Image 1 (cartoon, helix red, strand yellow):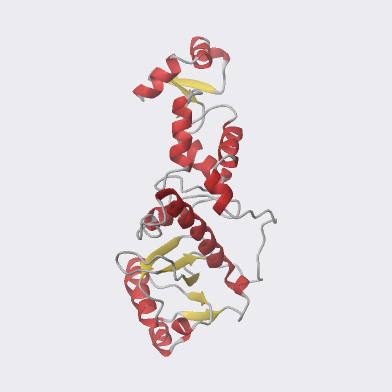
Image 2 (spheres, one colour):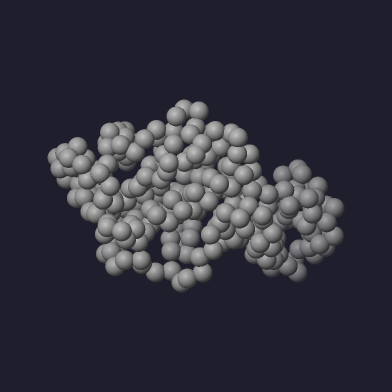
Length: 277
């Protein structure tokens, strides 16, 4: 806050508002800091180095930004900061980002269901699971796959780097990372790969009353939400690999938990309320 206050004192726009605060209904003052009048109020960030630094943190860094798009970045930043034409500034920043241009796919089609799957009645009523990989290079721990699990309604995501895509890996992941932590889902949607349709998997599902649903063969659109997540995650991983350099064997996996957290704490047009904020 001290750095922000100093930046405001050096900014003519901020000084003018502070001296005539009664004439600006969209601003307020708190502890000598000029704030945007929102609920709750958030500090005004003057134009200059500080604003560029905040844009960098919320778009470029793995822990907070991970090169998400304009609307996601804007939503996260508006919760903490404010300045006029914020939308335009973030949009220009993302348009000029080389990594976003290289690795983020453009999707301009209007939102809609890829297949007429009936919407879930509540969270954990319909979930989806899939493997992504093999990813090269293999990590130092021997991991070369990522198993992903998402709740269709809330879009809450759980991911884990694993060594293989066998049925044993599926069962361990479900027992230790899903059921033991979050409870038993009602219905689970997967593709028709052997690691999902094996007898071992069905023996796990049957006694705990999980209904196993299968996507249509050769039509991954049936399981579109997890496929979309894998596509977006792959773009982020490739971007981080490019940023840190391809020789690092940990590059594809070292920010996986950050990405999982970001996916579960962002809002989208199709899910205005993030799963966990």
